[in-house]
Image: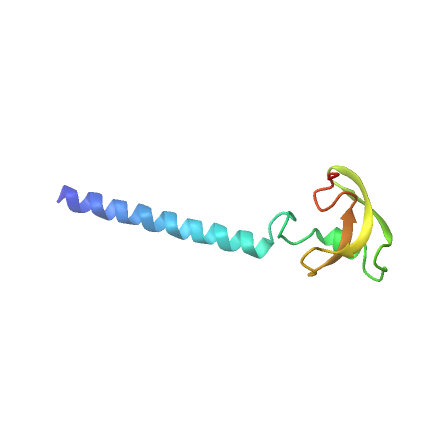
Amino acid sequence: MKKDNVLKVSRNLILTFCATTALVTVSNAQQGGKGGPGGTPPKEAIEICVGQDEGSQCTMNTPRGELSGTCQNTPDKKYFVCMPEGGPDGQKR
């Protein structure tokens, strides 16, 4: 009988782990990540370029300070955003 209880507990733990992993994965996918490469850009970066021409200068405040850049399409052409000087990560290449 003890072996059966151990198997039931093990099975329940495995099922709980799988369900939790699936929920976290779906949640991250719906949130679009944190705006990193391949993710959804921050909404502020999108909103600031609405109605602007490509190449227009843009400036916005971020948690890391003021960001300057130009309005342009993301590399995947999905979004028109304020792209930081030096690229999406803001670092010179």
